[in-house]
Length: 269
Image (cartoon, rainbow, N blue to C red; front, side, top):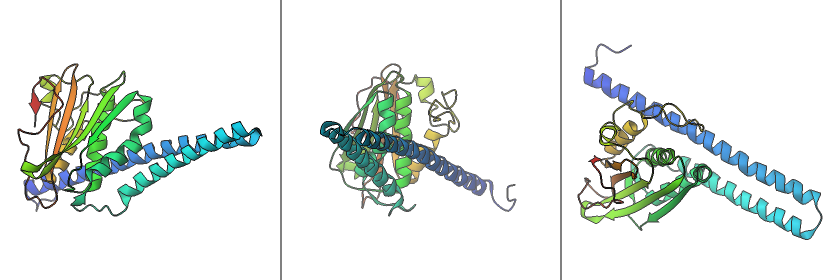
């Protein structure tokens, strides 16, 4: 029940904060599910090759088993470090944050899912300054965009992630570009509206269908003093550009000089 002593504006602000908190919990639950699945795959690999190594006594088979166990263990270490990176020394406060690290950790956590759907990832991570951000929130936005890109390429495809330094505006551009189905101008104008969705429901992985993802993404970026822009065209794909203020920057805006993967279409900021 709403508090009659609060103004409508105050009540709206409280509801927005509650929605954002719900989004964070949903993102955490999705991460736990993804990580659990990844660990299960790694453990099954270790278990199966350990059994093979015990079953056969020839050196060649045992060497192969040890190599597979070593590779799986290294994969488990990467996953563990990525999860710990989200939890360790990363508060809900805005602080100097490495976008390169966030990109690398996110791709490790989503690597198997992207491979499963035949998504090849190309990264171009320039040596850019740290940005002023809450790392967990920006990673939530990034993983949302990556999952959306994967879902837009039903037959597989190419995903491009870039970091670029916008020295003129003392900002860093994080660009996520897919070559999937794209969006028509009508859809493009609504994608940041709360609860708008083009999905019929969660896909086979349990992702998608709520319609609150991109709306919350925009809210998070704007709360950081940043901007999010999207360009898209049917059959050519979609490009999201996030601009965040770099460390010691006082302001950031989306400049016309920001570079995008070429998409001949309309855009929404």
